[in-house]
Length: 362
Image 1: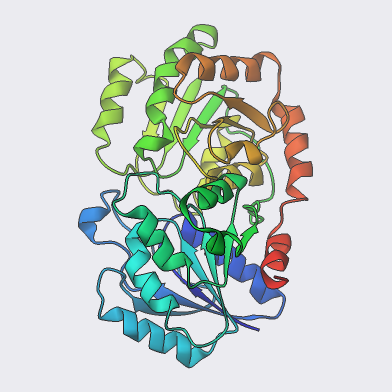
Image 2: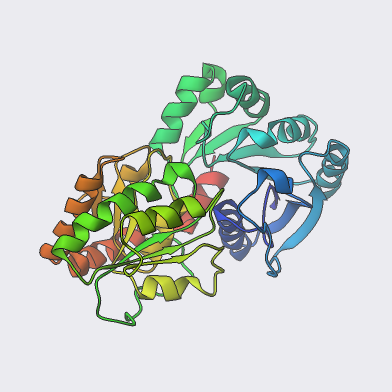
């Protein structure tokens, strides 16, 4: 089968590109021919204050960089390229309405194969004008919509008509398989990790407010923050200074390349996701790939990936004392080893093979 992907792939950074690349690896390994119809440029620099959008990596699969979604003259060229390749299946990566006009135009003009939207989100984390109309423009001409959490399915039901909902497939976010479990820590200090692109809804401010409470009980605790900031990083630097945390909080406000990720999880006992809203999170998949438990807000679809008390702990959002109490429970009850065992068992049931089968058997 010839399977085309529309959306970001390497060398573009970020979880959407990483997810598509892993899914393509799985499909290719089972004998399917894969081709990415990739972006030439993803966002205007003005709309992406987090810094660089690409790295020096090379795609593993055939990749045609044809689409700049905010430049309409590239849309017909993308349609022509996809139709010339004649895919049996086109997988469209979806996560924000910024791409609606380009994707809706393209989907309507593809003459070959089944068109499947891979929806990482339905409702954007930040307010977006005319969201409902833009969603309908993209989703109505698709043959199927793959959702990665029940939370996304609920959003689909709330925002789109039944004729769209009936095309949905409930999937999941597999655990990344490129990592070989937990590696030995580089120090014996208790360590927390906040990892990934930093946006306001991810609640880093809540974690920082919890840190003084945690330090009272665990004086040698340290927190590593690793990820580029979408906006003004000085907001967090000033908060760290105001709370007197400069000696226990380390910041690395930049994109962390794949080769560097293991070093950050090597230093951590537990990964913290104090999100204010969410659907699912690729950070959980990354943490579990290193057998690292997760403490996360009980919002959106996060609870579908974390079994409270087993593979991590769930807490109410925007509640620093509750977050602090969860961290203290993690250490007081010595939960690291038993949670690692549960994570190893969980990984066997959330594979890329299973997700690929779900897509192909529809």
